[in-house]
Structure formats: C-alpha cells, structure tokens
Length: 433
Ligand SMILES: NC(=O)c1ccc[n+]([C@@H]2O[C@H](COP(=O)([O-])OP(=O)(O)OC[C@H]3O[C@@H](n4cnc5c(N)ncnc54)[C@H](O)[C@@H]3O)[C@@H](O)[C@H]2O)c1
Image 1 (cartoon, rainbow, N blue to C red):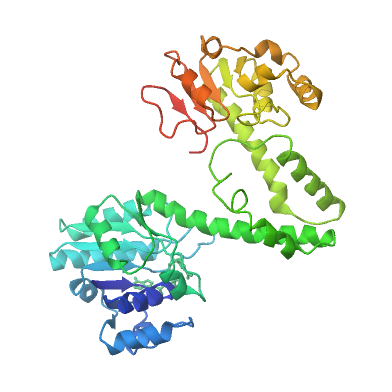
Image 2: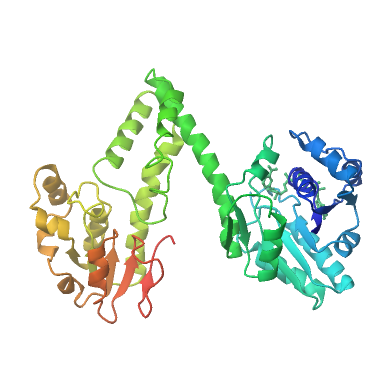
C-alpha cells in the first residue's frame, strides 16, 4: 500500500520502518525538516534497537521517502496514518491540536486530490476524538470521501520493533468498512488477531492499557516495600503471584461491576494496611482500594435515591453467588443504608434462606441488619411484587429466571452484569458499564 505517515517521532519512525519492511511504500511527513531529512537519508531520528537497519534498507530499496509537504503526502498515497504527539497540557488533558491540525491539512489535500482517502489515527487520543477528526476531515474534504479509523499503538520504546511484530492484537476502532479493510491490509503480515470495535472503545482501551501498566508497577513496588518490612524478598513474592494465571493474572476480577466483599478480601487487605501503618510504610495504592470499594457501595445507594425508588427488592445478600457468607458482603451496607433512608426493602437470596446462619456470619448480619430475617422471602415473585426497583448484587441463573417475571413498572439496577445487554422493554440501570 502507499501510506503517508504524519509525525516522524518514536511511533512514526518505527511504523515507517516496519511498514516498509512488510512491503508498503511509505512517505514520512513531519513539520521538522531535520527529521524528514534524516529519515530520507535512511538514518534513524531516534535510538531504537534494529530501527536504523530497517530504515536504511527501506530507503535503499526506495520504499521510504520523506517530505514536509502534507499535500504531496496525500496526493501520492492512498492512506495517511497520523502519529503526531498528544502531549499533556498543564492541567493534564492531552493537547489534541496537532492531531486536529493534521486532519485539517489532510482533508484539504483530499479535496484537491479529488479521490477517496483513508485516515488512520495512531496517536493516543481520548474517547470521542475520532468522531471529531471525522468532522474536521469531512468538512475540509468538501464532499470527497474520507474513511477514518482509530488504531492504537502499544509499542514500548526500547522494544518497539519486537512489540510491533509480536503485538497481542491489532485494534481497529471504526464502523467504516473501507477504513477497516485498509487497516487489515496494512497489518496483513503481523500475525496478531484483528479486533474491530467502535472508535471510542478503541480509544479508551489505549488509556486503560497504560493505566493498567502504571497500576501494576505501583502495585509491585508497594508489595516490595511491604515485603521488605517483613524481611521478605518482594520479587520472590511477585514471581509466584504472576505464575497463577487462573486467578491472579487472568480475566477473573477484571470486569466492571459492584464492590468486592466477603470474609477474606476486606480482612486481609485491612491486615496488610494495618502492618503498613504499624511499620511506617507508605502504600497509597493499597490504601485507596477500600476507599474506592466503599465508593461503589455509596454510588449504588445514591443511584437508588436518584431513581426515587422507595420499595426496593434486593436479589443477593451474600457477597457472591453460591455462598451463604454475609460477612463484609457489599449488599449488607447497601441494604442498611436503604433502610436508614426509609426505603422498604425485601430480599431474595436462596443460599442465605436455606442456610440457617450461625456463628460469625449470623453475628455479622445481626449487628448490621438486626431484623434481616423479616426482610427475606423465599419466593422471588413475592419480593418483586410492588417493587419500584430490583437491585441485583451478584449474577445467578435463579435471579435471571425470576426476573423473567419482572412486574411492569419495576426497574432493574444491575450491579452484577446479569445482562450483557439492557433487557428489551425494561427500565435498566447499572453503575459502571
Ligand atoms: N512513544 C511511545 O512509546 C508511544 C507508544 C504508543 C503510543 N504513543 C502515542 O503516539 C503519539 C506520538 O508519540 P511519539 O512518542 O512518536 O511523539 P513524538 O513527539 O516523538 O513525535 C511526534 C512528531 O510529530 C511531529 N508533528 C507535530 N505536528 C505535526 C504536523 N502538523 N505534521 C507533521 N508532523 C507533525 C513532531 O515534529 C514530532 O516529530 C502520541 O500520541 C503518543 O502518546 C507513543
């Protein structure tokens, strides 16, 4: 393919080199003439393993050229990839000026060219940016078709070419078949699966991916600090942690939903926080976890009040499906709060009803919701009868079945992700998806 790359920085230079190696013809565009000249000579503008060899070879076989002229770039190519910088402004927001400027330049050049063009945004941009880019491109192109996609870059400096070749996936954020086809063709030689999603999802994935990496680094460092204080080697600990790909490094627990709870997570985290304080160790990330969790519970209650629900059915009092454990269940403080605000609450939880609670479990629920037995019903239909709202706190087939008989006029607050899609004809609410 004939591809112009706008922005010959880290991303642009690596992309140009890899595209050329994979057989595409690349025209590198930058406002900085020195960078363009460097690329055109087959030299690397940055230090990156293997890059200078690929660039030199690309220039030698005539597959890499450079220009400072955006019009020439659009005229001589079918696709433009935008990899200009999106630096942080003083207030932290990304500065999207360079991206929008380039889109305007490309759109104007497309109008002059008079033929359809594909534009791929590769810079890291927040959700909604591709939609804005499209508006700019379409306005400037004056009726000439422009097909746009967002295609995030996941390379790490220092391992950029390896990361390009061994990408986990190629993400294409678009609903435009021509743009999708172009991205697929560009990466035909990269053996990664192609995931096509709506642009805003793809844009968000890039931010989440970097936030996740930052959280992992910070988490591991706080583990290291705690481990040191116990005279343990934190690296030994983390080496074992990452070997569990069932629960630790896996999709488990990685789905937006409701607060965590139960007899172990809150207790053990609280123990670690206790020792951190006792040993004078600063672990702000660990400390923020229970705070964020409590926030989810507060948000669930606030949502009930926002919906002005007075008669509330709660499906699930235990902390998860298949257990009668009520200790630290995030449903308990929610029920307590709703009762405190004068809501009429009825609860359905088959495991809890059957169980005949005892010991610490019974003590916990009595301490929090003393008359909870009176709120519980074995028949879910009785729980639903006359309810303004049903809150689902965990996922279970019984709940789904019972909700088939949801009375007209009863809304759902699905904290568990019981439904992948909002059920048709129902008033459906959720907190974080
Ligand atoms: N560096 C990384 O490891 C990395 C990885 C993934 C994604 N990203 C994202 O990719 C984007 C580019 O990052 P980078 O590190 O390559 O940036 P960079 O600052 O190294 O390069 C950006 C280039 O764009 C050029 N430019 C600015 N305005 C231009 C215009 N109007 N026309 C042509 N060129 C123009 C600049 O002169 C510069 O050479 C950013 O959004 C960044 O967040 C970077």
